[in-house]
Image 1: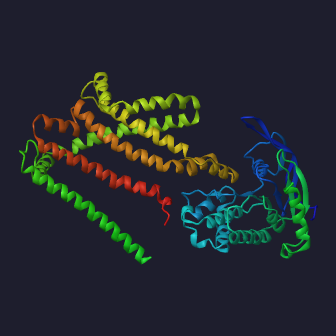
Image 2: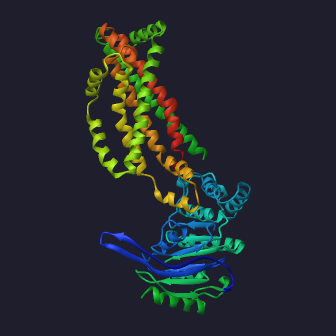
Length: 246
Length: 261
């Protein structure tokens, strides 16, 4: 990994707690890491360890109690939610264009949207409403909407959790195709160590609550050569599992 | 696809035939029953149509309908505005919510006849305010409850998504809040207008000197039962025209994204 590259997001000693009936629940404790431009980083950890909270703090939907996020205020973000959050009263095309409208000029937005719809096989569905689509197609629209804003960083919150294996591979292919073409950064939240080692340049392993970073693992193998049968990949996977299963 | 469209057309055609058959059966039953009674008790369909024709020719239909419609829309408009505003307040503030919910329930369970008695006492007979007051009191709870439920149903995860993509507050209001509310607004309008229409006629019957309700009252006082039936047909026709001419189209437009096919 070339460390000369530009840092696009940096979390510095971020802590976050939530009020519960039994007092405050400490979720994140002094979490610090950086995401570089054009890098895929996976955040792996047990359920409820605060992975989504980290994404929400980066987007500004939540404030941290201590520490903070350093990023360009104009950093263009795409976000893929675990369950598609599409506006049901807008067509596929309108869902994408209405979110582009705030980040791209109309002459820039239309061709980007058009190309993505064609490349992802969604052109035939562009006038359909989300309720008329299968769950898989909706998740594809969710991904295309994130890509259509020409993001510098895409935040992905367990995007493959509720889709079947075939669709998961299709969505990962789509993501990597666009990643190779556009070179945006990706921060992928997943509870699947396998997804993390197959997609990411770097895997950050988080502990149980109160969450701290317990390990950062580089995956320094070209993606084309990654396979679970590859000895290095297997050892990285085993290393992650060692922490996740602790 | 062709089979699907053809079966859909067949199904619509069949439904229309069944509805028309139901109306014909009622008309025949009415006609047969009318032969057993004097017109004072039950005028026949033909006598009703003759009365309708004479009302039309006398020029009473349009002015009375317009007055009734104007009152119904005024009362409904006020109820809609107040219901919308108070539902917003109730959602935004816990104190307002706790204050409003029991009051709205009380207004809803008081029988309309009580409101009309109070309106006559407070505002007098033959005043527009008497009629509008009744419409407001009957329609307001319906509007409030529907819009309150609509505000409850807003998916705030969509608002979060919109904020990530830097949507402005204006865009969030028009693209998310108003669109989420639309089915509830249409439902409130549909039920509210029907309530308002019935309440107007009721209020005019008891406490007014103009409008369709008053004309019904006059026909009743003069023992012109065939005119009572004729005015009833006019009331039904206006409401059906409103329902099928305007509301159905608005409902279809508001719910176009809910169709799964």
